[in-house]
Image (cartoon, rainbow, N blue to C red; front, side):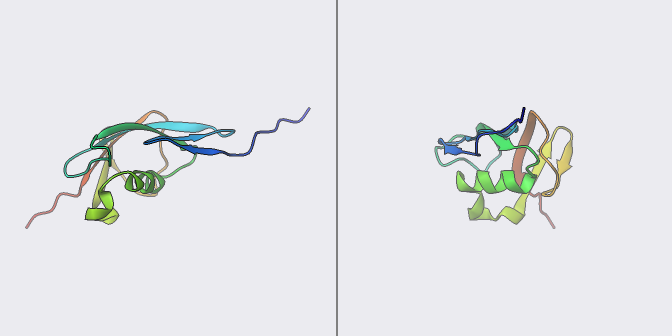
Amino acid sequence: MSLTHAPCVLRFSPLTIVVRGHLAVKVKVKLLAPFKFCDGTVESELEMPRNSTVRDLVALIAERSNIDKYGRDQVMILAGNKIVGHEDLLDKDMVAWIMLQPMGG
């Protein structure tokens, strides 16, 4: 008996990607000022394909927010009690705080 999956189908709603036929991880996203989603909210729960990176998450958020106005390279992501890098894999039930990198002189 062979186990097959339906092809991957992406269905876009205002802030969610649903990936059918593949395992997904849920990520709770909280945007800190000056970032906000296009609908004016600052918090959302997104589903990402398993083995997605933080860079993939930032790319999805950028499609639905004002992050590109400031530059994706200016984004710092906190998850739990640590700063995560763009190449880090997303964790199951991750809570990601997205903010501008602190700068000063």
